Image (cartoon, rainbow, N blue to C red):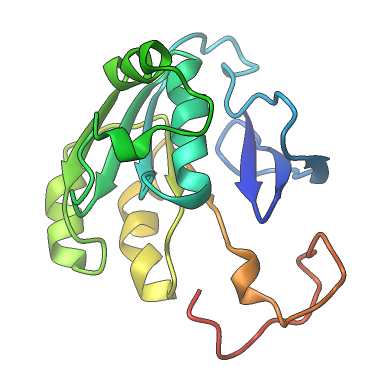
Length: 186
């Protein structure tokens, strides 16, 4: 399966083997160009996917949600519910009301607190997803329940990091081998 991960002003392309691991090739593509965020499985798995987006109402998660829903995928947001699906604050710049309404037909939400591991697992235990995009994990403890929940499944788990993890630098884009800021909250 191919997935394109939005991160820090770039789009990072990753290619996953059939079990969600395997060879990875990464490259950076300038943001602002039309890019595929998720496409059908290369093995012919075809069509609409059910995708969990942790967060999805701010920053890159908002654009990821839009890109997935606009491609016809069923997007399920997991968030605190402070901005429900359909809230006008979730419109992206230059999106028409008609586009926004169409996107919302492919988007739903599960309201919960990702920092409460018991609640997270309880709410997601019986849910099946083709992919999980984890947009806002700041500590390993935030993401570990999700990883454990989906580790023995066919679900593709994509962790989307923030440029905020890196030491301040004028070199852009940040690369994974760059120095990290040990005081980062990300």
